[in-house]
Image 1: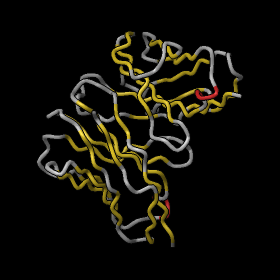
Image 2: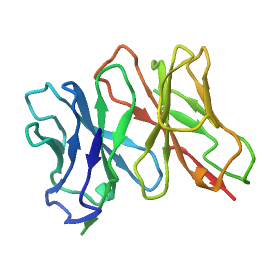
Image 3: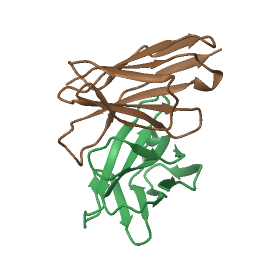
Image 4: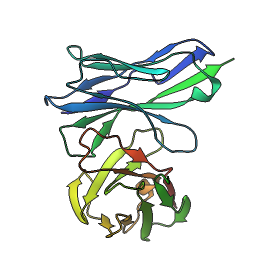
Length: 115
Length: 114
């Protein structure tokens, strides 16, 4: 069965430091996509970064990078130079196949950035 | 460029009642999907609409139904509300032909069932 696992319920990081949020996935499909979303207390899911299963390069978007290790089925999010505004819930999600908006989400990691 | 907008933002209902939630997709998007997020959990896929038809459905009972209008906006209807339906309901939109495209989410409608 398709599954996303986030094993870190909570993480703390000091401002300006880097932090890695873990995500592993399970799928039998060859074509899939991996997403990271940030959810502040307002509730909106904010898209951060996307990695396609056939992408050879790790995705990067500003301070966010995705450490994609296909053989290990992991897609960890790295946030560099943490800011106080990065404090939020972070969700890893997977889209199986193409032409679908069905994402399977993990249980999330709550990140707290302290001064 | 308006993002995904949802209404109402908060609402309270009692068991057995019915509720309708509304969603306007991001400008230029033609596909809408709905998710339910219970407290402390990740969102769960309810269904997806494209060209006014339900294209895909998650593991939700028939009490959950939807509709997409010609302008691509969408409604989620839940009948015979249960206490367990209390959740944040998120709408997401995308462009159908953009196979690797991201989903844009709204801020959600927070439903409390008493």
